[in-house]
Structures are given as structure tokens and as C-alpha cells.
Length: 287
Image 1: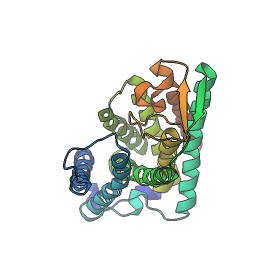
Image 2 (image 1 turned 180 degrees about the vertical axis):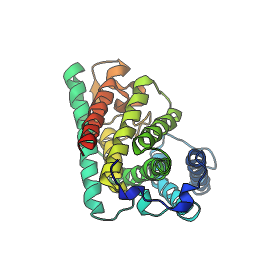
Image 3 (image 1 turned 90 degrees about the vertical axis):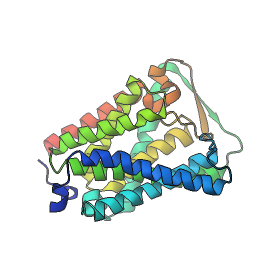
Image 4 (image 1 turned 90 degrees about the horizontal axis):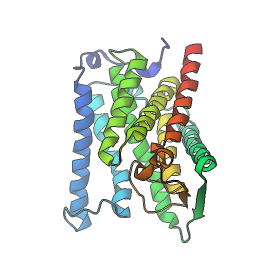
């Protein structure tokens, strides 16, 4: 087994009830969402009448995931007595690590779009009168949101499971939970589940190898931003309402286009992610 600094945990954490980590993933996320919706209702002037498809709501929801990060950090540090290092907060070259992760995430999406284009042809239509300010807000928002999900599923859950299970088993289970959580977004089918499962596996393997949260947070952010803001695809069924390009595929088959779930739910995305996982798994075996 590879010795990994981010697997260093405290004695108190080892005594944490095994099932508690699954419960806390759901509970703490729901608490952060409830707090955010309450604040949104308070300051929006519209009460609890929320337009979930509005750009204001979508952008503010991305920024609200900073609250999710804070809640998980407070719980992990002060209740489970975790260290920041065990959550992946290794600050060595963190900006460079995040940038490299972003490039990999963007490259994966570009590769998926290119392959789908070769199979069914795709039309990229440049969007006129782009709101640059909104694009920048989405960029910052996805950085925060990418970090929040990686703190939850890799830093907290995966490493917590690894205190009792083999690292690869912890990676698989946390990836399965990561995929299941996205069922709530709607338009979920077998290929979207498999794509998210293998995306979780790839993120888990990279987190274990890179020994920091920044690379996988960058990959997650780059994946979402390139998918939704650059190519105009839905992100787990969510339409951002703005993009640099609008990508039209000459196929109505959700297996190839991902349907309403978005391009990440396509068969091609699954294949690309499977190949990525195999490459890194072979790299681990050789290590």
C-alpha cells in the first residue's frame, strides 16, 4: 500500500462510528442548504418563492457552497478532531496544483466534445452579447463549489472511510455515494450514473496520488466550468442560462449527447473517464 500523508488521522477520528460519516455527509449538506435558502429568502425580497432556474439563484448557490466548506471543516476539526492535512489541505504549491487540475478537467470535456462531434457531428454556435461579468462570477463560483464537493467526498468521506478500509475500497464507496447524491438533480439514467461514478473514482485516485485537495478541486471546477459555461451543456440537469458557445448535437440519443442531464451523462463521457481511471490505476500498481 502506498504511504500517503493525507491518510494521517487522529486517534479520536479512528473511534468515530463507521456509519456516522455517511449520515454527516447528508446532514451537514442539508444544514448548509437550509441556511442558504433561508438567507436567500430573507435578502431576495421574494420570501420562499424561489426561481431555481434564475441566474441570480444559480450564481449565489455556487457561492453559498463556501458555507458548506466552513460547516464541514468546523465539524471535522472540532468534533472528529481531524487535522487539515487529513482533509487534503496541503498548501505546498496549491495554486499550481489547482491550475493543473483545472487544465485536466477542461481537457477531458474538450476530448468528450471532440469524440461526440466525430460520431454524430456537433455545431458550435458563438453566443453574442456575452455578459462577461456573469462569466467571471460563474468562474469564481465553480472554484468554490468544486472545492466544497471535494472537501465533502474526498477530504472528509473518503479519508474517513480509509481509517478502517483499504484506500481503494474507500475510493470506490465514496465515489458511489458521490454519484448517488446527484440523482436528486433529475434526468438521471444509467450512463449518467456510470459517468459520475467513474468521475468520482478518477478524483479519488488523483486525490490519493497528489496528496492534496487542490488538484481535484481544480479538476472538478474546470470540468464544470468548461462543460456549462464554455460549451453550454447542462451540468447534472442544470442549465446555467449563459455560455460562450451553444453546442448542438445532430443526435437525439441521450446515450451519445447525455440528453437533459448534460454531456457528462453520455456514453462517451463514461468511456473517457474509464480510460482515465485505468491509466491512473496502472500507474498506482507500478508505483
